[in-house]
Amino acid sequence: MTATVYYTDARALHNNQSLVAKMIALFDKAKFGDLFEPGDYVAIKLHMGEFNNTQYIRPVYVRAIVDRIKKAGGIPFVTDTCTLPYHPWAARTNPIDHLKTVARNGFTMASVGAPIVIADGFGSDDVLVDLPEGLLLKEQYIATGFAEADAVIVLSHFKGHPMGTFGGAIKNIGVGCASQRGKLNLHMGRHPKYGLHRMVYNPSFCIGEKCENAERCEAICPVGALKVTKDSIEWDREKCIGCTAHTFATLECGVFTSIEQLEYLEATSVAIADSAKALVKLVGKDHIGFINLALDVTPWCDCISWSDTPIVPNIGLLASTDPVALDRCCIDMVIESPGMIGSVAESKDVLDPGLPKLSACGSFLGVSENIQVNTGAENGLGELDYKVKNVVSLKSKLMPEYGLFIDSGYAGRHMAKLFKKKAILPDPTSPTGGFKRVESLDMAKLRPRRK
Image (cartoon, rainbow, N blue to C red; front, side, top):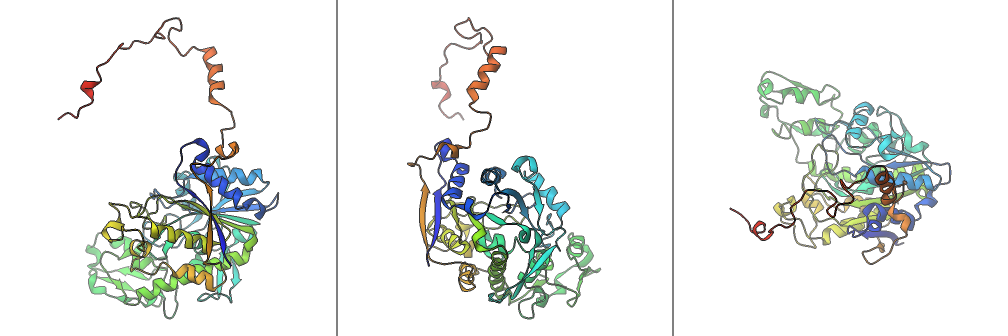
């Protein structure tokens, strides 16, 4: 079967071509309003950004979707889940830190118009989904909030990813809808072949308490498997759950290395798509819609505490009910796009159109950008074949409602009322309005560049 992907470019020359307006046009063209009934609880799943990340989806997009769902009779809530300690500075590992972080990033009830809900509570509120269809995962733990929702609208920032090679619709639900236990499962925690507890351990690389990061290396481990000594570091391999914390804590010194790391990253890509299948199976494919914002396509994800220069120019917005087709389409558009000068695409020598950029710029070790989508095709998550329907272009005319005018109406009418109470001109009877200004200025002397 061939899936349909609705597309609009990133250009805008008018209020009705705003990217916010275009996103709502995609929502309607893809008939996402049919995914739920009036009175249904509709989860809006997105990544609201790590602390100090700057390229996550802006709250204005979320508010527009919230308003559209309300207009269709749904009851929306905005949601994400708790993370594992992927790196020492993770600020979303519990709902308290998570809500503080997303509020700092601009996501509050006031800004988005709907409650912000952490779908797995303190990380452990989940349901078990049996998954015989999975290529690698045969069961998965999904946050309870998604089991309670009647429908899900998935907003994804399409970009690179160090572990999944790319992050789009599949990763947003595959990782983002899993509880902490589900995340440990898909990151191969204690897996007998791929688990990170099997990594090669080089304690001689550590200088112990003299290192400025000594406290960080102990604090990062949630099970106390790391202990810094006077001259080195001790690692309890049997206690380690393989949550990735120890690898990120010691990236600079290389205490943990493994020639099998490529296999681990490939296995994680497979598991992400298996986990996504579990979410779709739980909610029902007839109740999930996906929108990818292929804007600010950074080499790494929104999970880290910084954002690098985008690797390609803005591509646009895309929507589908098929996450595999949607991500495949985004991957292809990134491949065909020229790379950005000054980005990691230049340093990796993948600036030319036609070169795979996500494998080069996103993955630690150049993992194939095809694994997630190929797994999704194998486990029944979606289709690889797609057709693109262009919804909005600079030549098209949108319905006025897509302009999303502010509810107080046209600005001039309100200003007229205020001007009647207090004139805006200092002297309305004067030809100059009463302002003191020079009548004429020699602009020619200001135009040349001065030394």
